[in-house]
Length: 293
Ligand code: NAD
Image 1 (cartoon, rainbow, N blue to C red):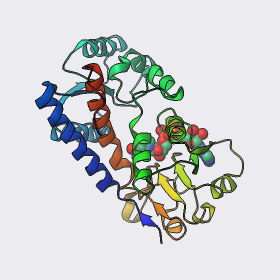
Image 2: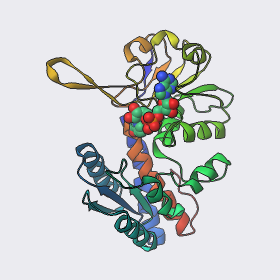
Image 3: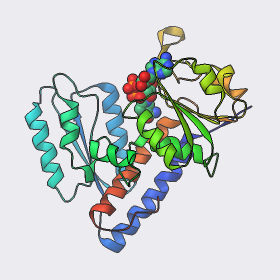
């Protein structure tokens, strides 16, 4: 029976480390890290995420600046706000909640963010630095995946992994982070052939696809560590919906060595990593050494 990796516990430990370092930079350097979150429109799921980010940012002792903009905000108005936040010394992290509604161009918006404040790690400057093996602000969900894996294996060196999915938000940066840990990585995507055979060979499985229970239990190498990024809503009894991952959890439990549940796994880590990135950005902008988080 696999060990269930508790994302709540790992995320709470990270949030505690962040809060400790925030208190230290406040007292030693009079620096209060600040995160600005921009939400366009009133998508209920995005509103829940933004509220949670706001509460967790404040709980860590940081300043939280929420900018709620109407659905009909123009591209020019949104860009003007980003440029203002780029210049604001109280703001060290800028996050635009995606997806953006309507005709707004997400790529242009992301490109407008100062790379030093790009705590989502999506600016091409940060993506390029990460791909080149240089220090970079890195997308939060892949960072969370690495921390969850390290809660099982203190060193990943020499291990083999598969990353299923090649999005800019999860799959691609995760591949780079695994390379930085000296892991041998296979990248799979919608055109890959014989996914079960590719998965059966590896020690670490990362599923970031968005297909409910795509990865079956008997595809997994016995004892492998499985990190399930997928969040899929499926129909449940009584007309309700149920969240499931990209991995058939109950099948995998019998075969894997360790596995993250959905919910309660990777999803818990994303905001905690966002706080860590905001603290890192604040220290870098102030010319301080990297915080110990
Ligand atoms: P995406 O749609 O941008 O990318 C999906 C990837 O899966 C693509 O690269 C595609 O090539 C690949 N793919 C599609 N079908 C495939 C198949 N049959 N076999 C192999 N690969 C296939 O999605 P994303 O933004 O990377 O998100 C992936 C999943 O992770 C979604 O369920 C999303 O909700 C979830 N997610 C969770 C968090 C979190 O905090 N837990 C954060 C981001 C995304």
